Every structure is written in C-alpha cells, then in structure tokens.
Length: 297
Image (cartoon, rainbow, N blue to C red; front, side, top):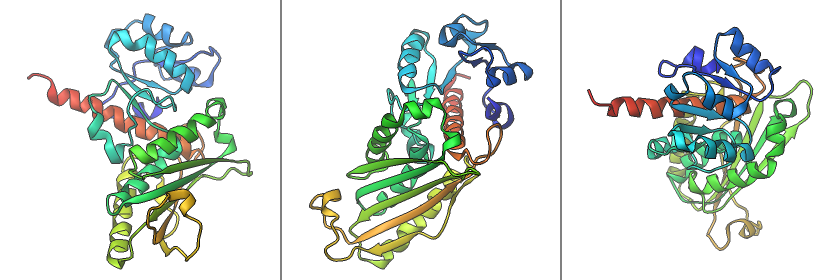
C-alpha cells in the first residue's frame, strides 16, 4: 500500500483488505483514507468501486491464495501473487516479466527467489548451469506466520523457479531464519556449477552478474553485491556428481548478496519483504502500462 501511494505514477490505491479488524495495516490505511474491509476477499467484492479495480495483490498464504484466486476468477481481475502458491507463471521482473504480461495471475515466486534467480539467470545466459543452489538467510523477526506456514512451499517453489526461470538444469533452495539480535538484514548466497575453463567466459559471467544486479537495484534500491563474484576451479575428486549428475564441471561461481529494505513501513532488516513488494509493484506497473499502450485511441 505505501509503495503504491509513494512511488507509483501508474497505480492508484483502491482498497486495503484484511481479516483482522484491529490490524495495524488496516488502521494505517484508514488514516491514509484508503477504503478498507476486514472481511477478506468477499468484503473486497462487495465494496463500492470494486468494478474499477484492475489489479489485486495477494499477500496472504499459498492455501489462501488458491481460494482467493478462485473467488476472484469470474471478475476478470489481474492477480499478482506474493505467496508461493504458484498457480500462475513465475515472474522475476529483471528476468522474464515481458514474457508474461498477458497472464491473468502472475506469481512472484518467493523473497529468496526474487533475490537469487536473477543471478542464476545472469550466469546461464553466458554458459550452461548444471546445478544452482541458493541459501536465503532472513531475520527471524521478519518471518511472520504466513512465511512460517509456507516453508515447504518456499523451498519447492524456489527450487522449481531456479530451473524454469533461472535456467539451471537442477536447482535447490534453502531458507534460514536467523534469530540474531539485533536482527540482521537479508543475506543470500548463490552457488552455480558450470563447465567453463576460459577466463574470457569468467569475465563475461562477472559482467553479466554486475548488469543484473543493476537491473534489480533499479526497483529494489537496497539490493547489492556483498563482495566480488568468486569463480573457482573444482578440485579433482570433489563429489559434485551427486548434484549435477554426469555433466562435466570445471568451476563454481559463488555470489554473495545483501538486500536492505527501504523501511517504508517495516524495518530495514526486512529486505525479504521489501524485495517481494518491490517486485510486485514493478510487475503490476508493467501490466497496466501494457494495457494502456494497447488501449484504442
């Protein structure tokens, strides 16, 4: 809500929907004079002005999104899904948004996916990636009940998207809820196994990753490399065959990322939530911009 109000020149905030009448989010919306309902998706459908709403952001849970999508389907709304439900195509704005501008329901994968899949894609557009593994470490305080209820969906959805969007032959995802106090900002590690001995290819990989980081930072300002990209040779006898099958492997690409939140509402350490809402905002803006350019004069 706050990102739409403060940052978007394309979207107008139509309504804030919740299920807890005492929630801080709904109270904040009322103070900002945004129409609200605490009756969930049915309350949204019955609201004045519902017919004018074109995009619905769903930030509930994977199971709840299935019910919400079914309830909204007859009304022709475009859904931007911030849960791991994966009913629609996976979308990572810096990688494949243009391919899915006509989809009625687009899925934002997961916070770890939004942070790391662009890096896997940056490597795979230079050389094939036989295996990619991502580790997303987020502050425990930033993991609400929805995140905790969807841990299995997080790992499965992210791993699948590493392959289908990132381009890796095999993918794996790990999430760590870091209990440190004070809370640490989001950190992400990406490992890619490749077969590329040529130093010139390594230079292209570093350049591709650098460009991708800039592309993501254009809509997530707190997204950055934590240190230089590392490309190291795989020692003889290292048991990587269990990860990548019989593919020939020569090097490991290691990328270390940091995602600091914009602190529009949640603390800066909640970069995991900031990257999801930022990606969702960029996606919705492009969906509407596409509609406006196709509208008859």
